[in-house]
Length: 182
Image (cartoon, rainbow, N blue to C red; front, side):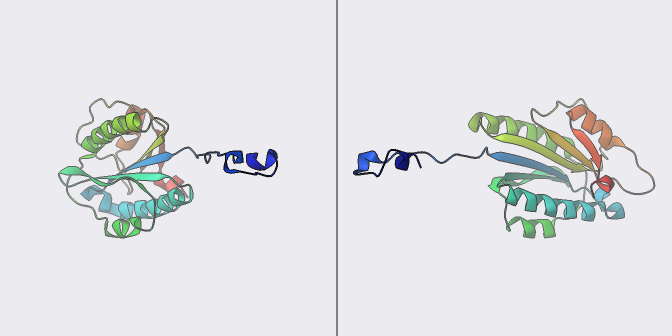
């Protein structure tokens, strides 16, 4: 448009080059607690439904996703800041639960990774989503994330310990229970 405002271009120098406006890049870091306790009362199944919707929303909003699972003996990275797409669906279908809850290790890894990424991409907007039932053995003092964060409590069943709310408070994250997400 700026070229045409100057009249009809007669030579190459008359063309006004304008960089494309770039939408702010957004990264969603998702930490999934896939420990054995999340199998009870179909908590992980419900979380998978929520994740499928999240992946779809991320795709529509052109957000990048980083996925970290906490199950067994350690936290494992699944994706590191990739564009959301259909490639995430097979991973979601094969997501299973088992073993212990290395959630605190996953939170520490995520915090360090976000700090490095923030230095590399300073204009990137970051968000953290944690899906957990909060059943960790010990809860030492945790540092809050330097970005907006949401902890979704997937604890189900007749006896609820309510530890996820305390984790959210320590992390400075918003707290929601999955039953209220519909």
